[in-house]
Amino acid sequence: MNVQWVGLLRAWPRVVSLAAIALCAGATNAHAYIDPGSGSYAIQVLIGLVVGAGVAVKMYWHRITAFLASRNAKAEKPTNDE
Image 1: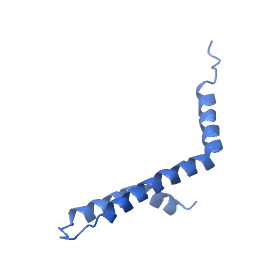
Image 2 (image 1 turned 120 degrees about the vertical axis):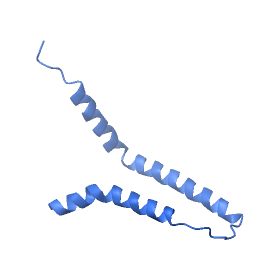
Image 3 (image 1 turned 90 degrees about the vertical axis):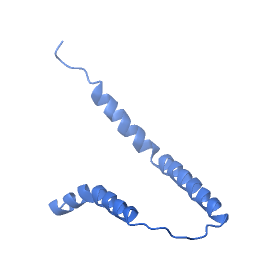
Image 4 (image 1 turned 135 degrees about the horizontal axis):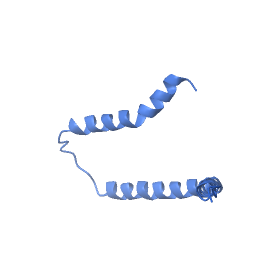
């Protein structure tokens, strides 16, 4: 992978965080009406996120358990110091 891309990938969380802070800092009052349907839409979005995360975990469960098992095997590896 190109060195420039690695630097951009490492800086991505900081860039997104700074952009979010800048957007929130410049926010003003909207004086807008929020109807009752907005609450149910927000609940639908949250339920969709939870279900989507559950499906993603289910799809990658084998890889997750294999990764954790390999980490435990490395941690429990006996030493020859005895």
